[in-house]
Length: 485
Image 1 (cartoon, rainbow, N blue to C red):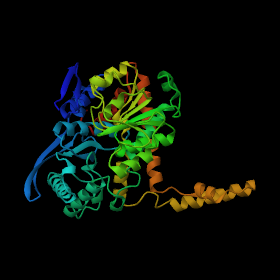
Image 2 (cartoon, rainbow, N blue to C red):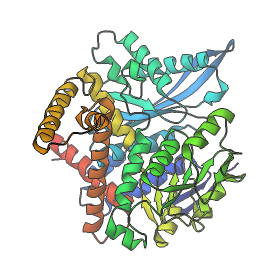
Image 3 (cartoon, rainbow, N blue to C red):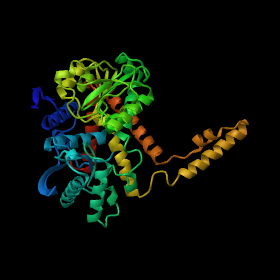
Image 4 (tube, helix red, strand yellow):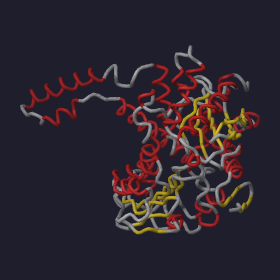
C-alpha cells in the first residue's frame, strides 16, 4: 500500500507508518520544544543530530543459498555513555526509522534520568520467514559486524529487544560478544533483555507495560488534571481500549485491569475484540495462546476491521502497536479523553494537533513507554556489579521485620496470622526492588513533566513539556563536559 503524506508548517502525516516521516515527526516535536528553550543554536543542533550511523550488508547462508542482509545501528547521542536502544527485526526497517527511534531513546533516557545516550538497531528481515537456526545465524553475524566497528560493548553501546526480537536473540548476542571479548569481565552487560539465567533481571518482561500503568495511574489520580478533562479521579469508571496485544499491550492491559479499569477493546493485526461490559485479559491471553489469535474470543464480539475500534468511545486509549496508527484521516473520530502511547510514535504530528484542539491529553511515548529502558538500566547495573538485587540484604530485612512484628505483638497482646507474618516480614527480592525502582522513576518523571507543563504558558501539551525536560538535561550534560563554553 502506498503512503499518503501531508506536510503543514513542519508537521508530518503518513498513512500507514513510514520511517522518514517518522524521523521528521520526531524532529518536529524537538524543534517545537527547542523554540521555547533558551540554549544556543549550536548546542540545540548538536543535541538534535544523530552522531553516528553504521549501515552494513553481510552474507548469511540461508537454505543452501547466500542471502545478503541489510542492517543498521544508530548512536544518536554521546552526551552520556553507553548508548542504549533496542534491535528491531522487520521488513520496514531503514535508516530513517532507526535514526528516529535512536533519537527518541536519547530523549526518553533523559526524561526518566537514565544515564545513557540513545541508540537503535535494525535488521531488514521478516523473522517469521526464517527458522530458529537461521535467525541465530543472522543475529550472531550482525553482532560480529557491530563488534568489528565498536558499535557494541558495556561502556559503548548496549542493545536490547524491540519489535521482532526477544530474550532469545539477546542471549545469542551476549554469547557472541563474550566469545570475541573473553577478557571483558563485564561482557554480559553488552546487551540487556537477556533471560534471567543468562544475566537478565527479573521484572524486565513486564517492565514497559507496568511503567505505562504507573504513568496512567499518576495522571488519573491528578485531581486538577482530571477536572480539566471533565473526568472523575481514579480508575474505577475508566474504559480502556488497547491497540496491540504483544508484550507491551498485554501487560499494560493486565495491570490497568488489575488497577480497576474496564478493558472494553483489544486490537490486533488480524482484527479486534470488543465488549462494553469488559474483557478478561488473562482469559483472552489464554485464548490467543490456544488458537494463535485474539479473534473469535467467546467473551467478546470480533471486529474484522480492527483499527476501527480506535475510534470507539472510551476514556483511555493505549496505542501499543506500531508508529503512525493515529493520523489525519482518523484523528477527528478519536473519542478517547486520554491517549497513553505504549508504542513509539503512534500519533503523527498532524494528528496530534487535531487531538490537542479537541482537548485530548496525550501522554507521550518518550515518558509512558520508558519502563523498558529503566529496567534495562537496572539489568546493566546488575551485570556490572556482578550481584543479584536483594542478595546482600533480603534476609537481614526479614530478620528486622520479624523483630518488629514480635515487638508489636508483645506490646499489644495481639498476634498476627501466619500469612500476615509472612507478608509483613518478608524481605525484598530482585523483582520487588526492580518494580519499586521503576515505580519511583515513573512517578518522579510524571511530576517533573507536569511541573514544567504548568510553569510556562507557551507549553500547550505534555509532549512538549517532556521534550523541554530532556533538552535541558542533555544541554546541561554537554555544558558540564566543557564542549560548549
